[in-house]
Amino acid sequence: MPQPAQSSVIAEHPERPATAILLNRSCRACDVVLSRLTRSCTTCGSSELDEVPASGSGRIVSWKIVPRPADFPPGRVTTAIIAIIELDEGPRIFGEIDGLPDRDRRVRAHFSGVHAAGQFPVFVLEPVRIARPGRRTRVIDGQPQAVDWVRSALRQCRLLAASNSVGTYAQSLVEYAIRWAPFGGAGATDLLVAFGVSRDRFLDLIHDALVAQVADDRTARLMKGQLLDTLVSAWQGEADEAGEQSERP
Image (cartoon, rainbow, N blue to C red):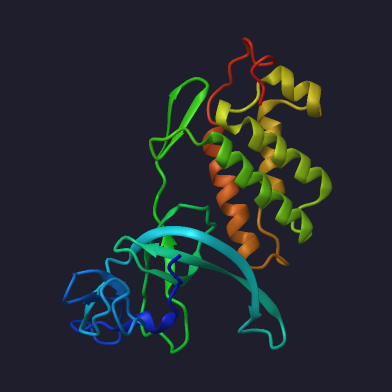
């Protein structure tokens, strides 16, 4: 299995001073693209390698939330999302994710200025097209992925609860909204039975549950913001009342 490379994959852009760029290496003998840290070709063994610009795009292989010291105030610890990125050219590198990641989510490198030595390259999430071709089907990136999204979103909600970013009641509201999201949201009857509220009032409660709090760190704010945006989009319009009990997720 290819091992991810460290942050020395970054260099100064040759045409834009004080701007960073991702680099790979290419084998002159067999044209295999390798990490910039590689000293000899893993395919043919040749040591004649040329540096070539990387596209900067790829996909998330895996990711983890890790603690790190905050810039301010002194002594405060915040969090960062560090991921293994498989670049489109093949090499795997470590990178920091600016956003809330999912496995196999498309990302692209983003540099806004001088890149400090030892820093991981920053990757932003590429937009996900969410279409709703039918009353009870959601399609993400052209593939039916509702089950995977629900699992990921529930995991994120539980992380927020574990870090005290959402309370117990708010967690129950958000988890309910997540489970119904692939179906356009629950109908008025289900909401009345489950929580005793109308659809509009339920969406207000979801907004209150996921609004960023002063004590939330950057990762919690990202999780809340993206969950809220996705849930609001998914729950737009009216849910079908007919047959919703039998089709409940």
